[in-house]
Image (tube, rainbow, N blue to C red; front, side, top):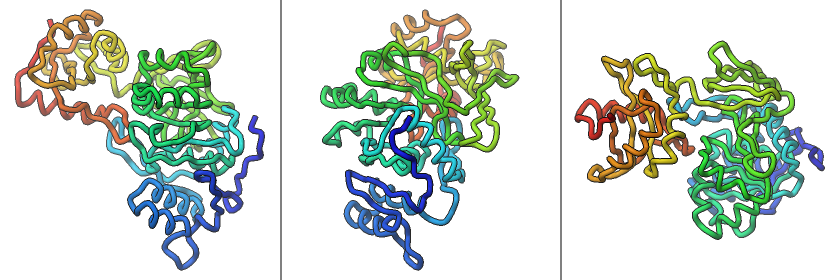
Length: 388
């Protein structure tokens, strides 16, 4: 349980940034003015397009008279869309996380994700309700390179964690974070293995914009490491008729949500995600889950890749592999070895080289763009490699 009382009356809240406290009066826009005092300071000191300026802008929105704030979905399966979400529900979500992790007033919290999306906004809201000290770092691949002291709490995406592990000083800093949560994308087995020996708690999160960040966590290290997500108190999860996860979390979302995530449950009511319904390829009547196929290939294919599909007159859809490599690279031996890990009907019919694999702004695989890229390549050239 949190050691300090939560502050849920917005007018009474203040924010600690790099150890300096800013009151509601400094962060809200006075009547008849266009900027708050904090906006004026951060815009002048760091520039209007800086991350610090976007933090001041969000705080001005938080302390205005509206009961909602604007967020955008990540766009991992389609076009990002704007949503209005309730401030009171955001605070409820923040309190769930702070209580679960046992964060306390004065704990430092790394803010290294864009404030356009819910994940970044929720780091700020946790600081507002629990008195955490924000350490803002412009979102980048190596956020730990920009700080002088290890934070007690950090929320990062898998790419940031992976990059940090490649640099000894950043890896050591990451290991000393007392509460590390990782979200915004799948954590593959290789990354999970590297985190398994960390001395402090490392968690994978499950959630979405509509649930105002995560509603469940699973431990990645220590004796409690598991493949199963533990829902927060007050969150009810179940299976839809299509075996996708449904969520009832009245504290953070007024409606029951039916997700596109195909999942299974254990006897303790915990759940495991198998993949997304819209990431299922139906090829010749055989349903192939993209995430499961990619996991099977990762151990044998060291080159960055994505699995997708294009229409096919015979099979309905044919499986395509996008490979991040130069076209003149001979990868045939690697592909033969990798495809031996797959059932026959899972094996890609075509392999295309791309300069960069498509990703969303938050570092997730951009599945919609991947399909478009594969379709464009397939329409103008013969396949570079054909599976047996």
